[in-house]
Length: 335
Ligand code: NAD
Ligand code: WQD
Image (cartoon, rainbow, N blue to C red; front, side, top):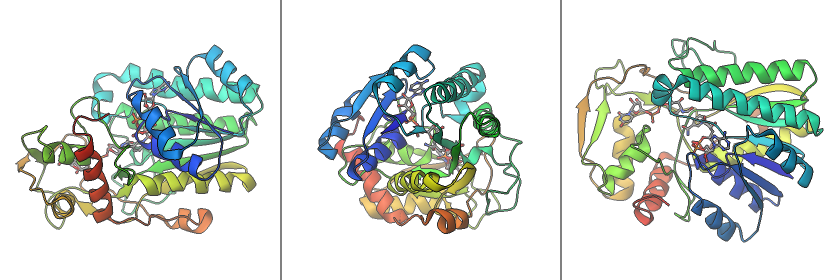
């Protein structure tokens, strides 16, 4: 059985669904700090299967003991954490407390209960974005733009030390780039609780009328059209990457680091155009100042995942836009 922390969230819910579809037994732990209870029913309905759910903060030792005692867990996927880079600048202690403590508490509980395999949600935010693009797994990390990125980098270091001390045996550090898209049913998707930080939910909320216009942060970057370039990856491809990582950990001990991205740079304006084409809705945009901490270009080399995991992103930007739009149109106010 696989324990998924943060399994009610955006990436977690899509991954849990894929695990259930592939026949894995799953237990989910989430405290709904950034998600809604409704997602659980929807996942069960779509998967036509049940799974154990624990409403808990994964920093709670007693709760972790209960979960590991009640289920025969073979591997943990740790999605739970806080993820908004901008917010982390204002609330650094909350970010360190959640992201570090959850990782430490989980690692201790895994060790005590004899569970030694972990897949960890890391981020492109751990890289030093002044590096040459594309970023590969050996590119320098550090010089992170915010406490969020630093917390993920610290978690990577903590997990590496835990493996070196034989507290864990096999750890995959998955560095996600920019997840977009939604399940093709339109039933689960990204549902930011406040004003969206990320581009795609801002686009879809503008399209559905919840926002009056989209502000494009910077049109004077040294990029082909002057707007920021990122590596957008469909959340379904990302979910599939977790299955590939689980299979990889069967036979590979130690710490393995993988970029999960599409390996291709797409500008803000290109994403907006692709969305307009897929949805038939015009997005009112306005150019605004650069967002502090943003890098002009960030995209991944995904050769390592392709070679060692046998995984690569398959879905196009057009499909991701169509899926994000189906989700938002069917759920204008989220869950
Ligand atoms: P999300 O906020 O939608 O999901 C995280 C889930 O974890 C939420 O359901 C939240 O309620 C839960 N949670 C948070 N702290 C918890 C705690 N202490 N105990 C129990 N549950 C807790 O975020 P997401 O986009 O699905 O991201 C999942 C993971 O991937 C995060 O660790 C995030 O940092 C990482 N990541 C996300 C992105 C992205 O752009 N979405 C990119 C790179 C990495
Ligand atoms: C993408 C592009 C913006 C919103 C963040 C985190 C990173 C990872 C992924 C967690 C940039 C522009 C955005 C808007 C805009 N998350 N933009 N108007 O910044 O690449 O990465 O999410 O690990 O750590 O930093 O993603 O979606 O915020 O921005 O013009 O309203 O869209 O300037 O060029 P980013 P994003």
